[in-house]
Length: 237
Image (cartoon, rainbow, N blue to C red; front, side, top):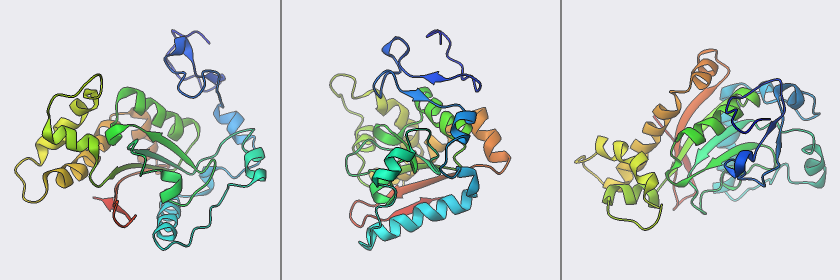
């Protein structure tokens, strides 16, 4: 595959690592096409409706908060099953914060969640491309944007002060959300966390692929926030 070709070819094998720019997971990772994914033995995410996928996530979070963890899909058999293809039932765009790991807070396992993590859960073009891959080629019926309480990236955007290196780059992607709730009563950072979830959802909805899947009823896009104190995930409307 030519590294200058930035398009997604559904009928060809996709590889990461063009010029090193996309080599975020080892440089030679093989990503399957729809046909390859469909050939594996594990159930397709299309077996779940978007609402069923959301219910499955939220039920896992309830187990997590109640300390009744099942730790599904973490066996040796599951590892071997996933050597051929992946069939995640949900895609989650979350913050890179070490306290907000989707597989843990939703009590899921290997191959269950297509997990895209970046500071401030921002929908940059590169992030949107990853999400498009999951919803279009892997067919995940649920796409969640997950913010969290006391987010450092959102706090930095609220304070909007100088930051070293490239750390401040994500602040620019959050500032529009901060502006929307400026002057509102309550905690400025807390208000901005929810506003940022809504704003990033709007950014990813610029994707024609995401809009088409949603309009066809094959995909549900939701926003949520994670409470660091209780471990609870609540939907953001």
